[in-house]
Every structure is written in C-alpha cells, then in structure tokens.
Length: 472
Ligand code: GLU
Image 1 (tube, rainbow, N blue to C red):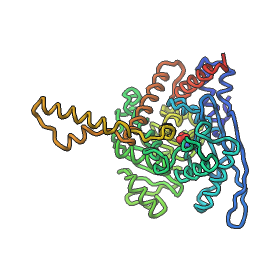
Image 2: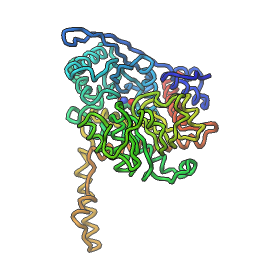
Image 3: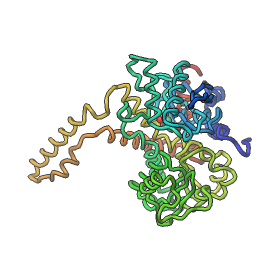
Image 4: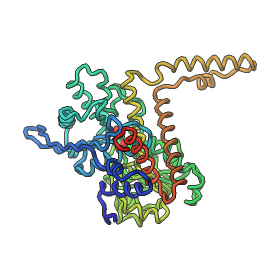
C-alpha cells in the first residue's frame, strides 16, 4: 500500500510497482531493475576564502544493463541521497524509453550555487570530478555526466578539462561528459534540447484527435493556454519554442520571486530579457502579480508545465489543479499520491521519463559526435546539396520552367548539424510517443501514460538483462 505522502524516491518506486504489476517480467528481474546498482557518497574539502568547507556530494549509477551510464549533475542545497537515487532511476527508464543505449545515473552536489563565485564553483566542480576519476565513476565508456538543475555547459567544460588532465592521451576523452559548449566538443542544439523535446512531446499528444475529444479540446497546439512553473533552461525553451512554433498562448509564469498572469498572453522571450535586466519576472508590463507563486499551478489552463523541481504537485494541492494536461518537463514534479487524484479528475499527465528525454537524446548525439571525432553533416552536406541542384536543373530543362533563386536555395540545401540534431530529436520523440500510446491502447488496466511508459522501459531493460544471460 502506497504511503500517503511519499518522498520523491518512494514516488518513483510506487510508480514502478504499479507498472510492474502490468508486466510478466519475473520478480527477481524486476527487483534487479528497481534497485540502484552503485551509490557513491562523498565528502570533500574546498577552500572558500581563507576557510575550508566540507562539501557533500553523490553519484549514483542506477543500472548497468547498458554502458556507459548517463545522467546530469545537480547543484542544489536540497540534494540528498534518495533524491539522487530517484533521479538516477528515472534516467534508466528515460534512456530505455527513447532508445538511447545507456544505463541511468545521476550526480548531486549539495551546495547553493548562487552563494559562490565563479572561481569557487570551478574549484568545487574540479574537486568533484577528481573524486569521480579516483573511483572510476566517470569516462566515455563508464559514466557520462551532463547538466541538470543548477549546472550548465560551463561546469561541463571544467569537468572535461579535469578529466583530460588525468587521462592525457585518451583519444575519446571528450565523450566523458555531454552538454559542453559547442566550441569545446559540444553539439549544436543541446542547450535547447530538453525544452524542444517537451514541445514535440506535447504536440504529439495535442494532435491526437481521440485524446483531445476526451478532454473536450480541439486537436492541435495553436491557441492552447499554457502555464509554466520555472523559467530555467527547460522552462524557457519550452515556452519559447511552444510559442514560436506551436502558437501556444502562455498565460502565466511562476518563478522563485513570484508568479505573473496575463489573459492576453505573455511574450516569453521578452519576459526572459526583462528578468535578466531587472532580476525578476514580477512587474513585467501587461501582467498582474499573483498572491502566491504556487497559485499559478492552480490556474485554469489547457497545459500546465512544471519545469523546475520534484514534488510541486502533491496530495495537498492536486485537488485544486484545473489544467487539462500536465506536461512534466521537470523530473518528478507530480507525487504518486497526487497522480491518483489527478487521474481521477480526468487530467492527462505526460510523464517526465518521456517528456523531458530530449536532453539525454541530444546528449547521446553529442557523445556519438565525440566518439566519431566529426561534426554531423560534414561529409554529406555539400554532396547532397549538389545532388538536389542537379535535380532542380534537370527539372528546369525538362519542363522549360525556371525555379527562382530563393526557391532554389531552399530546395538544394544540405543538412547542417543543427538540422540533423533537431530532426533526430523530433523522430525520437514522435516514435516514443507512438510506442507509449500503443501500449496504453493495447494493454488492459494500463490507463495512464506513466504506466505505459514504464511498461515500455521495463520491457526493454528486462530484455537486455535476459540477453546478457544473467536471467534465464
Ligand atoms: N539532466 C538531464 C535529464 O535529467 C539530461 C541528462 C543527460 O543529458 O545525460 O534528463
């Protein structure tokens, strides 16, 4: 029986159990999939000014059914072992779901990054990396970190540089971490990847006629109202791309400093600029400040996108949620007990392990780029372009009609790295959605998207274990 107020790790386990009961995977194998294989808890000293601070940090490798293991590193004062275990577990399911051939892992450093200077953050990051190297917890074929809450491409550069200092001459060293800046062996499109993936995932659901009928909505994204909680990397890109490419109307945004609302819609790009200049979203022209930042979650809207941290929709506020769809851009924003309430209300919850998988998908592309030592598109771009040009010329000769220079340049363009990354990401998100939908439609008693996603992920991981010969 599920506890009434599960913590994040318990929520993940409750969800696992609910879905596991829908499969025929043997119990012993389910037990193996569920546990975290390796938990590395560390404490290390860092000099801050003329004092020393002991930093608490973690790296958890949840599953080794595929290698390397993969997952971000979080910098937050709320980091604790169970949180990192929950996040590492989700990474395994996420990767399996979108056919990214990695096991799941996650790291956490228990600090409040705002309280440190760049120099101090660099020292903490380099020391954390050193600990990982010492215990063989990092490497392109072992375990590959990436950004997460509180970290960005900047930390990834420090990680790479520290790793390389220890592993001089290792030819694939650049693949020891992803989410690096493009100039430092990163890939175009990685920074926006999670938000872009959220957009593709929501678009797939919203284009589904049957699902929209059940919610009493017209199919399609255009004109749908959206509320975003958290304007970090994921929330910002989800908002910008949903607005620019999906014509969604963002009616409220909630952040650390408060929540704002506008029935007419909020231009997210302008809001991000405003926040950079003033340090706050509050006071953005044309918007009203809401009494409490949590109030944004309870607004009437088509799509609610929690894009910050776990457990924001819990038993205490689930009854008050009026959104028709919840798109989990963050990891674990809905507790398992809240989800029971939401599902009874007929709300569709699009689960984190699917919806925010765009980040790790493009991380996979970056890792492949690092191992191949070459940018995607470099070999074929010009060749393809020339082939298309020959076709257009032939068309002109055969028909006697001429194609304008502008049209010609569109028709004969070869794909760049960014085009290929976006196309690969879109294909991944569309494919995974179809797989989940199919399971949800086919499997008796599998009534929600999270269970269907879990069933899919568990089946794939179980099959890997069986192929290893570990389980008969
Ligand atoms: N931190 C991201 C996530 O939770 C990305 C992980 C990665 O790229 O390895 O999915």
